[in-house]
Amino acid sequence: MKKVVLAYSGGLDTSCAIKWLEDKGYDSIAYCADVGQGDDFELIKKRALSTGASKVYVLDLKKEFVEDYVFPAIKASAVYENKYFLATALSRPLIAKHQVLIAKQEKANAIAHGCTGKGNDQVRFEVTARLMAPKLEIIAPVRIWEFKTRDQEIDYAKAKKIPIDVTKKSPYSIDLNVYGRSIECGVLEDPWNEPPENIFKLTKNPLKASNIPTYVEIEFNKGVPVKVDGKAYQPVTIIEKLNQIAGDNAVGRVDMVENRLVGIKSREIYENPAGTVIHAAKHELDCLVLDRETMSHKQGLSQKYAQLTYNGLWDTPLKKELDAYFNKVNERVTGVVRLKLHKGNCMVVGRKSKFSRYKEELATYGDKDVFDQKLADGFIQLWGMPYGSG
Ligand code: ARG
Image 1 (cartoon, rainbow, N blue to C red):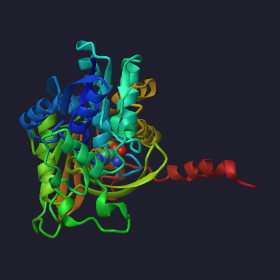
Image 2 (cartoon, rainbow, N blue to C red):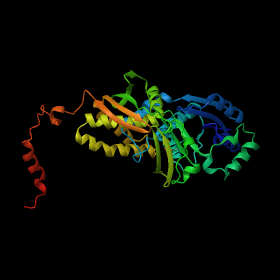
Image 3 (cartoon, rainbow, N blue to C red):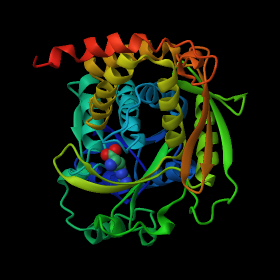
Image 4 (cartoon, protein in one colour):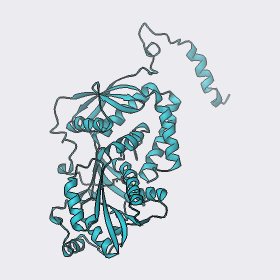
């Protein structure tokens, strides 16, 4: 039999995939990437083995995910279509990278994933894998298998005695990792429907959140968060901590219709409490320490960075070049931002930095003013000169 490394979630699709691949002559090595989805990996491991996988890998990728994927995206202020902090998109190239590494180690003939043919994730997995191992076969069972409906798939699972409780399936498709949660399908497919309150897990209902605002201070070092309220945390822990604080205050919900790479629009709900407060705080710090030209120039590159990430082009030259650019820009993005979180609102109420370009003696209207207002006249005459008709 040929060997395939299957990205395995423990759900119906990837469990059926083990059997389906077996029918096609492949022995599956199941691979579970722990990016903070809080799954019971012992249970999943058992399920993979009893479904027919010959071996299971469970890799804890949380640290690498936050340090090498989430943090660079934060430095780049990468937000897709101004709303999506890319939690799912960022995890895919990392998961694919380790899948290929396992395939190489196991001398496997192929890798397989459970993505559909309509989404972005298939692109992210496969582009990453192709760039690392151009000759490795990639199999996407869900795109090509014969099951047209979920019921047919369930019948197959029953016939093959796959140990999975198919009755508990939620109407939603959910992706969760340490940086955020994405929810789609079910009633959400009509963009006019308000998201039901019970889909949210990381953020409190604003009506039930505390009436008293929470103040939180986030300290940044070179563009990434390092302390919360004066206390230092490791990257994964700081994200978890901020998810907790912001989520408790109902901060971090996003409802959007987005443009998928494959050409369709889709409606997705996101919960990204930590991302929301970090991006808000980082932006304010940027405003304080960066000069005007850098501030405006980097905006377009942030958008480009988000598009590359979203569109599966993480491991490409331009993305790496942009990392170098943003590392340079962030050399001065060190300081503290104070936020006030209250019933879904995230307000920046204070910022300070040893690299601040804000000069109170120039800005003040008080008696410490050193701005020479007489200079304004000549400046304005020259500024408008190119456009005169006389
Ligand atoms: N739309 C998001 C993206 O393309 C999330 C995809 C996965 N969403 C989900 N609910 N399973 O990155």
